[in-house]
Structures are given as structure tokens and as C-alpha cells.
Amino acid sequence: MDSFFSTLFLASCCSEEAKLDFSCISTEEGVELLENGKPVYFYQKLQKSLNGKYICNNYLHPLYSLNGDTLTEEFPIDHPYHRGIFWTYHQVYIENKSVGDGWIMKNIETEIVNVKTNN
Image (cartoon, rainbow, N blue to C red; front, side, top):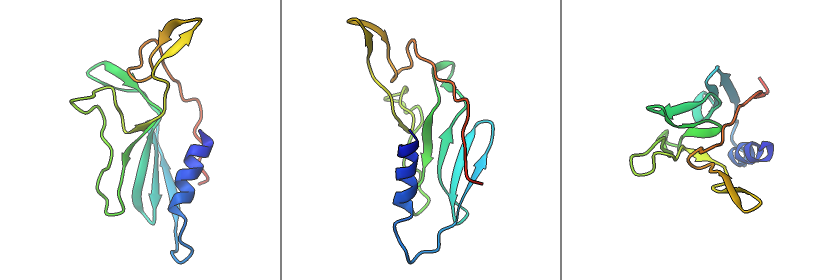
């Protein structure tokens, strides 16, 4: 997962000409990444749900465009188990038996213990 965030960060830093100033705002809910004071994305650390269903965390939302438009959705009507940018295994099996589903968080729960930032 660290390489995922490093890739996102480095992709934002590809222009040598631009003076970039990244900062983070950490809260109990998660961490917001800012570039020159403008939001880039929010990392959801604390568990969220849609009316008590689809309890999830460990995802990016919102992710913003260079113009400040929101590019991601959280709990969209047609796919309420989707949340921003997330990474998971859809089907988890042990010895040919389904034991969980990370898309809909069936029999799976994540607990984020520590999030580190450089500021």
C-alpha cells in the first residue's frame, strides 16, 4: 500500500518547473492531501457506512481533478458498495470455501492502526 501512495504522490510531482508544496491535514476520520493549499484527495481511515450497510474504510474519496472537480463517488446509487478508489479482493477463498468479499465487506473488516505523514 505504501507504494500506491508513493506513486500517487510522485505522479503529482512530475513537473520540475512547478513549485509544489504538499501538506496533510490529519483528523480522526482520515488524512487530506493538499497541493499548494488545494485539496488533492482524502484518505478515509475511519469506518463509514450507508445507513449501517456497506461498512468500509481504507479508500480515497474524494479525489479531485486539477480544476477542483470531484472525480470519485462514495456509495453511488447503482453500486452502493463502491467507495472512491479502493483496493480489495472481491472473493476470498480458503480451501475452495468462500470466506469473505472485500467489495461488499462481507465477513471482512479492516482496522487502520496507524497513518504516517511527513508533516
